[in-house]
Amino acid sequence: MDTEEQNEDFQRLHQLIAGTGDITSFLDGMTRLAATTLSRVTGIRIECAATLCRRKRAVTLAGSSDDAILWDGIEQALGDGPVMEALQTNQPVTLKDTSTAVQWPQYSNALAEAGARSVLAVPLELGDDASAALNFFAPATGAFSNAPIAEAVVFADTAGQALRLALRIATADLLAEDLKAAMARRTVIDLSTGIIMAESNCTQEEAFRFLHLASQNRNQKLHDVAASIVSERNGARATPATHFED
Image 1 (cartoon, rainbow, N blue to C red):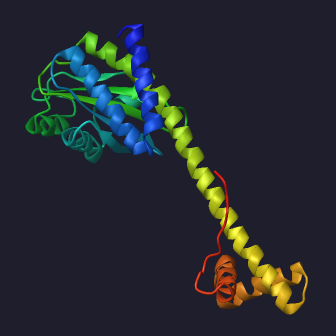
Image 2 (tube, helix red, strand yellow; image 1 turned 120 degrees about the vertical axis):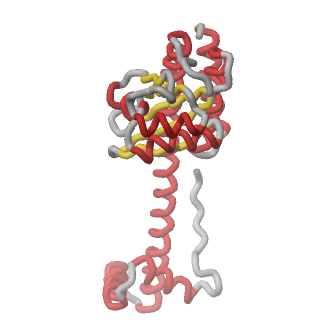
């Protein structure tokens, strides 16, 4: 892969980040792009799956086809194979012929019967909290020689950078949603406190103490007690409107 092609892949991956709404959609696009790249180099149809490993558990997240997801899932079910070794060694791992391989015999036999004859697993650098790998499958033996391996490593480096960015964005979005939810809960509690203050002619501290005691006596969450008070005063609309900008 020359510099121009690498830059094009980088741009396509970043376009995927901007154009997809969640991490799974991004990974679906990434595996399709990876499969296309290796298909171009090898001259045969290559499929690709993405595996994420977190807290010592590996999960197939996406694939360029249903077959790729199925084949990758075989390794996850057995708990051992090229992806696991690639993640442990941080090096590409190849399986040249699944019908004759002596390493991972159960995995190799299952793949051979399913139509995948050679495999290439390439790790992605994500940092300390998680690791990931691209798992390439070919219908022919010996498909992953030095040139395809080198191409896959370069692609994986670019894909790793894009995936780190996509994960950071996804995490930031989740944090933003959590903050919105917390602010909405706070609004309900503040409204109910104001209602109690107005009706009981008490201070804010006394109103909040009343809420807290009601929560304990009813064995309900503070927010639920507050929401019921607001709901009683708010008619049919149980949840008050909140206005938070993104």
